[in-house]
Image (cartoon, helix red, strand yellow):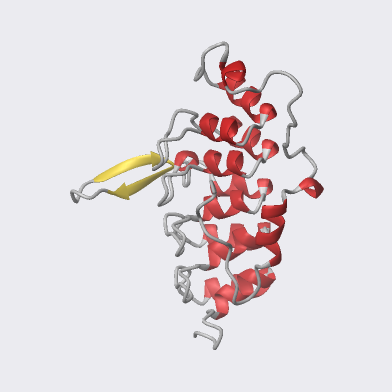
Length: 231
């Protein structure tokens, strides 16, 4: 059943966080991967809103975490984009979701670590966390196995993005965990001296303006803004 706003009933349930209704639809064999008119599936909406119980129910009943919305984001990218750190353990739960088998252009398949899944822009979850200045999210992703040497479609690693954002805190975090830069990297980037460091601390109340605008615009017929996180 598709509503007038272009949403499926299960999408609406995932948006509102009605876990009992979600479980009821899942037991009734509802299509968990049916997309709305913007290619958001129920699992995407649960990740937008941060509904832990609904997310777990959808995953337990077989929601496909590989499917992307119209912005090219899989559910894990959506969760990171909306700063829902508490969803990561469920989205990456081993062994079911620890790695994914993806089709390739030549018709074969490849296995990819879920934590390093790239969206259509080539961004991993760590790229998105760094671009949105989310240090707590970046720390969690690194603990869960995120790689620091993957380049997106613009040829940039997460460290390159941190330098572009002039975020000394994230640069130090990435350098501490990955051997990706020469010892004088911060000096080369002009980050020595009185630099204004803009980084998100552990409190979710310090969300960046861009992130807050995204979340304010998410409602029944609304979708997150463009996937071009670097502009």
